[in-house]
Image (cartoon, rainbow over all chains, first blue to last red):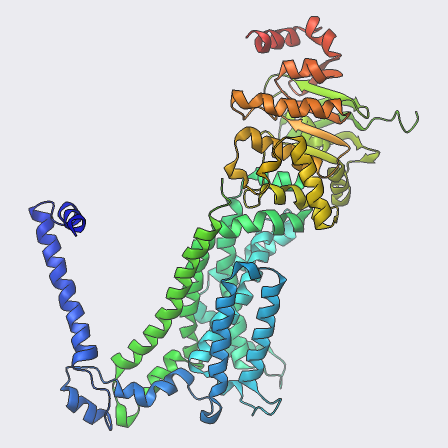
Length: 351
Length: 249
């Protein structure tokens, strides 16, 4: 107690100006905090027959969580058939389990790849159905959180190996490989994600032969993968360039050969260096999946926007978007915390 | 010439340029099996470049380099075959910082020689014992002193059971009190009959182990003689000047 008083005096009240700044900030923070508590808890309404009743009960002073009671499930699961919604719920749990399992470094070998392969296959079957007594659910009905997670997790998991290959290609001694990698990365990076998605959804079908159709979700997913591979590649390249030439030479001198040199010596070190910017892009990518709403995929943003158009419950923007903001935050915060833990645990083997 | 007399490493009229800079000028050198060659000369004289050409870390543009009967051409498969048989120790150690000492030593035997893990670890511990640091096996390179790191680097090269070893100024990056522990290991290696080409400024070491001294200046081999002869009566003015500088203190 005495210690924290001394700390406060030294850091918060060291002079007249700093005391004034401290008090002002404390006042502003307290007010904002009180505003949130008062709106979200004190004046909040938890049960109501419809939006009008809810607004009347809160007097416009508080949140109407009753709205989420009615529409929350739709925002999360979207248009997926109501009776089958245990399937996407299971998919979410499988994704969570895969992510948690990936945190265990003892599994980092072929096991984790096998686990992911099995998990993704299981999720695909669960979502699509049509086998093993599961009703077929076309991809147009995949929506909400499961769709967001599929786009983000499958997208980034597939973009990452592609990015590593592109980064290696960009530093290759073979001119053709290097030129192709540079061209790919520069072209894709020079284009906004939204144009890539439009290309995938609107332009691509025009180039395909009459009668062939590729699933819209698949097209968006591939566009997302190709886009993020280019960004991740540049981050991986940054890591590769930070590795001293002596490491390459030592691996060469042992006769490891190119692929083993990269896999066993260079990439483990380069990717470790690249963890903070990689996670940065992972987080940005996760949130960028919201752009698929412009090509008509029904992700979390779309389900939320759709929910607030209900005539019975019109206009609960803050509740709806606040709810999905919390969902996004949970995932992004997990990624951020995990990357910090990973950096700490990898810190030992460093000169 | 019979198989046994054929040189283990042979450079014939080797030239190398970096752009316009003529780094190696008509270098010819034959190293017999079991021979210890010490290369000295002022900095920038091409010593390191020469031994780095021997295992293909640098490409020569003219002339022939033959190692153990295999000619070093641009083909990756050939270069890798030669690298498996020729160990190299660098000035900056170049241990792999993300791997433990033991993993540094077993990496190439496991992946290149396809040894079983138990066998690779036996070999690794054997050589760690020879460089006198078996107790450091579980540590990371960053936790060792410079001298210990360089001894691990020597053991790492030996784990591949090479037929020859190249040393590129192995003690130049070390604090003075650690030089001896590394040189002792190298002397022992020389006594065991390892074929060695060693670039170094340690003239005491050269006197002890060298069969042949090679003096280089400005990219060319200026003198080649047994150490007794080389140190007693260097033939060229440049070698005399160099020796007076490195031996003056």
